[in-house]
Image (cartoon, rainbow, N blue to C red; front, side, top):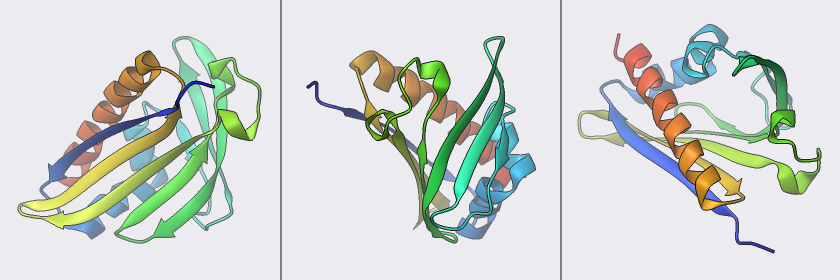
Length: 142
């Protein structure tokens, strides 16, 4: 079996951790960062999370589960997309992590997504997460 890769991006946001956290957990703000996807969850560990919308002209409903929810510090959830073309099996889920750490000038936000199946998928995911980070930064710094 091929080694699974992790996509990672990070940057400093000129806002306190609570301000960054507010963007990550407000469904309307998070939707802006997640390319317009509607995000639904109650933010409790073990609860479902869904993402629905349209991507490249195709409707989608992705799903996962909240793994860790530590306000102002750490958000981790699993993620599966039927658009991947892979069967809905645990080995085809990614784990997405948003880690917030105090930094000079604000808060460092590190976003990682595990279980990329190829270098191409990892690179594509990093580009998407870099866009998410940029939008979170804009929203938190308002």
